Amino acid sequence: MSLHTRQLVVDIPGRAAPAPLDLDLEAGQCWAILGPNGAGKTTLLHTLAGLRAPRSGQIMLDDTPLAAISRRDIARRIGVLFQEHEAAFPATVQEVALTGRHPYLELWQNEREEDFRRVAAALAAMDLAGLERRMNDTLSGGERQRLALATVLVQAPQLYLLDEPTNHLDLHHQVSALRQIQAQIRQGCGAVMALHDINLAARWCDHALLLDANGGVTYGTARDVLTTEKLSVLYQHPVRRIADGDHYVFVPG
Image 1: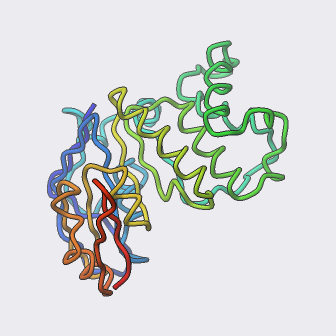
Image 2: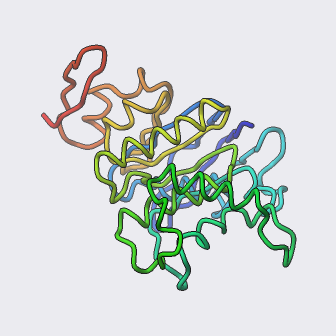
Image 3: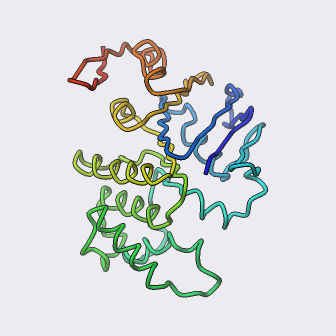
């Protein structure tokens, strides 16, 4: 599955129109969205998911306009991780994760054995095995984040749109979560992640999109986009790149 934008302009209230985007998000790719606070990273993700109307332009899912696809079919193909995960109502960890299977169930249909197997596997992958009966409002911030990631994995979409997937996670769980996303990409999915950590983007993503505070955009391969010059302009602060064997890390200048 692929997602394409043509002259897409996201609608950020109270802001001048940002530059139009002509993106081609293909299966097997992992994109990072980087930019300062308020640049529109979340708005772009929600627009790509069809949750917000663009100011202008078009989004195509394969060869079909996203606006012409039912929400149910979109939910089977696109999974969204939101930035915040407030418990709307009391539920167990297992019950929350099972909501990822709702796009595949008919009205009033009960979950199937396959759905429970998917939930068990996703909870184990997110280090939540054994917490199935815990209430969601008793979880820590990191546990809620891992549960939200598990729920998206249970949904089994072809494209993952992830808003700060490492938010609230310690180092071990950051790496574990990104490995799970990378595993989905190796199986033919695609991913777009809004991140604040340049080094996570450099380590895990092969493409990058930079959104600056004035509506400017730069995008392409991570190698071409994640440069000290471009990042220093993006964040309005000097950025240095330090070699670490075959890899490199970015640090404030």
